[in-house]
Length: 138
Image 1 (cartoon, rainbow, N blue to C red):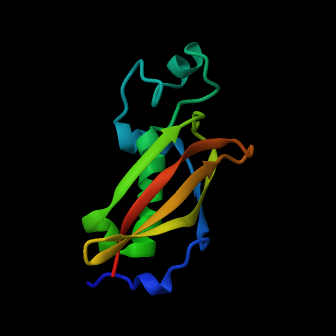
Image 2 (image 1 turned 90 degrees about the vertical axis):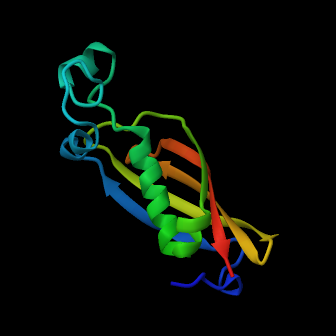
Image 3 (image 1 turned 180 degrees about the vertical axis):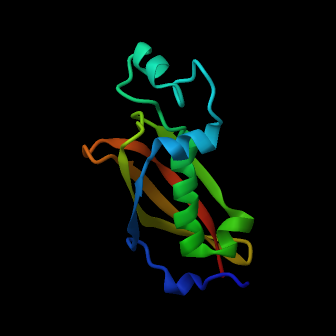
């Protein structure tokens, strides 16, 4: 597998949005079901003030990684970086839409580092995650 050509990526390019329904079953598989967990115990999550169990933040980060692999392939796998902030909880039953846009292209040795600004939104239009991810192109 080779690096994607930097010339084929332009600043301002928008990545195709990715929609991910967040099912309790996915959360359970990600965490392992345990009592008194805000992720897998419905009653415990409600006791802690949430309408439903919370998805782990790393689930959203994994979706961002998936988008970066789609964009850069090996260039993200071997040289990827992610910096995110979780700003709203994601609940079981939510549907997330991940968005991304290329923000910069910077020389890095013999390669070009492509940086993408990301944000995830719930079906309520609330941003749940914001940040950047980057990887290498030729």
